[in-house]
Amino acid sequence: MTFDRHLVLDQLGGWRGMVDASLPTIAFIVANGIGGLTVGIWAAVVAAVLVFLLRLVRRESVQQAISGLFAVAVAVVIAARTGEARDFFVLGIVRNAAIGVVVLGSLLVRWPLVGVVAEFLAPSHLGAMSSHRLPSLRSRLGGGGAPVQPAAPEVAAAAEPDRVQDPEPDVHWRDDPRMVRAYGWLTVLWGGVFLLRAAVQAVFYSQDEVGWLGTSSVVLGLPVTAVQLVVTLWVVSRLHRHRAEEPEA
Image 1 (cartoon, rainbow, N blue to C red):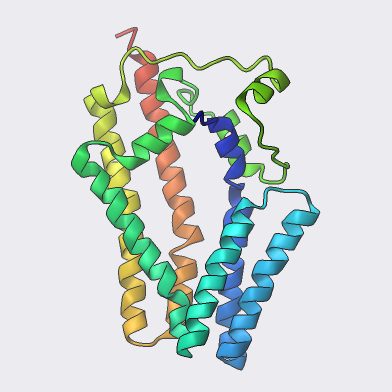
Image 2 (spheres, rainbow, N blue to C red):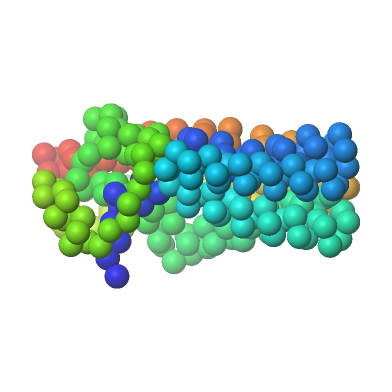
């Protein structure tokens, strides 16, 4: 199976996608505090459905909206069956813990997961980010409004004849100690944040602090992810410059 990294970038949804993913949780927190668990559940469901419909009407990518609907549905079912508002956040706690373990576990086999993802989305041997300017990556991450039409590789090639096949690297990034080390620290950053979210929310869960559960979910979500992305893009751009200057050295 052939993966098109350009199509993957389009599917990410940009900043709007991350904001949309936070809306059901915010709606649950506010409604639960005002009217109780039942009102909170309905508010979360309505918010998730509205996000999905809005993207559908605008003919935008609904992949993240569908994922959000599924996550909210599971969280709502768990909370409704137990009758505990705090159980709305169980799925998120388990998910963050699992992702954190997987991300950090990739270091044990010397395949830092952040490096794998970064080299798939923006291969460093192409030097596209060596000037610290991110035209293609930034436009795709920020332009979640354009509709995405998945197509077979041959159809995509016919539609975009100017797209040149990426050349193979002379040296694989895993054979460069500097890149492995940098991607390793970025992987520690991302994996550590996932585990931090899980640990903080687990404490509030054990204390049945629903308000703090919701607040930590939002605060440790979009704002922290934004900082992580900025740091990651800055480091990756320096790695691109490092590989671009390698032949001259």
